[in-house]
Amino acid sequence: GAVVSQHPSWVICKSGTSVKIECRSLDFQATTMFWYRQFPKQSLMLMATSNEGSKATYEQGVEKDKFLINHASLTLSTLTVTSAHPEDSSFYICSAPPTQGAIGGYTFGSGTRLTVV
Amino acid sequence: QKEVEQNSGPLSVPEGAIASLNCTYSDRGSQSFFWYRQYSGKSPELIMSIYSNGDKEDGRFTAQLNKASQYVSLLIRDSQPSDSATYLCAVRLGTNAGKSTFGDGTTLTVKP
Image (cartoon, rainbow over the protein chains, first blue to last red):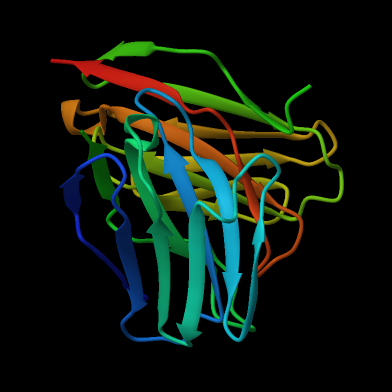
């Protein structure tokens, strides 16, 4: 089945630095990638949708200058948290929808636990 | 009203019992319905998908869909402690691609 590889699985960074999270589709081409954030004991919150070759679409209230999303190729989407602060500490998860013409649920990456100190 | 609502948890059942998880959705145009399981500290994994009214069975899991009532449920038979997790209901307008809307999840604990 479809696999999305997400790295790093966890990262600790200092306040004010930037962190890049990568998601790669290993055996299929992901023209779309959804990026979620999840705080402890809360549900998934969609942050943005990245599309290969075009600008990402951000959900209301998500700062696009702070959370930079790039979908450089059909197999790679990245999320960069710029000038991270402790309140950005969260679990970030990417997911890809079924390939075109296919039905089914999303394939999720394994998630990145970000801790900003 | 939330787009996707799940019965508030946590839900606790004894080992071997049937666990019943419920979900309602607001958009009548929804066509695809999914149940994901999320263990603590892990990302969600798809366990069931259903697209037409009725029941769909996969091992110990049965998904039930009633579009007229805008209701989807998940039954877990012979619950095991390893089933203890948060279960997320997700709804999508189309049958492929496009954004899914997730419920807040129901946390299930299966007690040995």
